[in-house]
Amino acid sequence: MKNLMFPIDFVFKISTLSNDFIATDSNGKVLAYARQKMFKLKEDIQIYGDTSKNQLNYQIKADRWLDFSAAYAFYDADGNTFGKIVRKGWRSIWKAKYQIVDENNNPEYTIEEENGWVKVADSIFGEIPIAGILTGYLFNPSYMVSDKAGQKIARLKKQASFFGRKFQITKLGELDEGDSERIMLGLMMLILLERRRG
Image 1 (cartoon, one colour):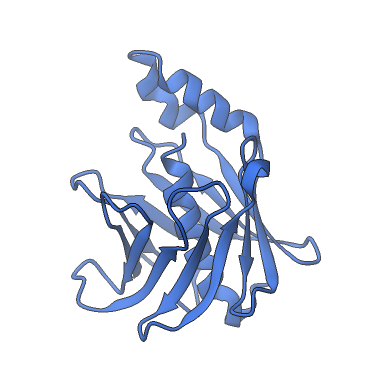
Image 2 (image 1 turned 120 degrees about the horizontal axis):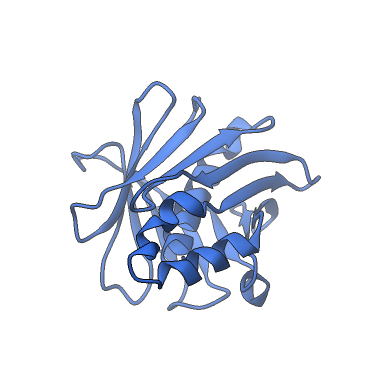
């Protein structure tokens, strides 16, 4: 996932039992097909080159069972780890906050939910019969990616849709080519985690 053409769209499939989505660039080219293994005690995500699932490019694996401070390591096709995304424990209860680190555990980027109230409203109204089906159009949380200096790099935002299945990444600043894989994998893992939380 290099030489990325923004905006990048994540569209979840609703016709399968798996929690999976397709990532496409601004030209409609498929960048990745992400598939989450179901009924696993520890998260295990496969990232394929396309929906044929012939070429496994990356894996994301949790270091422990579901936990507020779990870390999710990134692996390339050869099984080598090259970074991870770490949930910032109890600080993420109100507003989701994650950190992307490199292979030496050096912090590189922070991903933070921009408005915690949007997720709260989405969760509350989602429980109301009939009206709950409209939350996909009304409440759309967004997440900001910032570098160590606090510069805004990218934004992941839920798009208005009936089943809350569309998300888009827009570029806001200069993206280090060497870090693009970690940022993309980090956002993929974040959206799998946060989408089921409301």
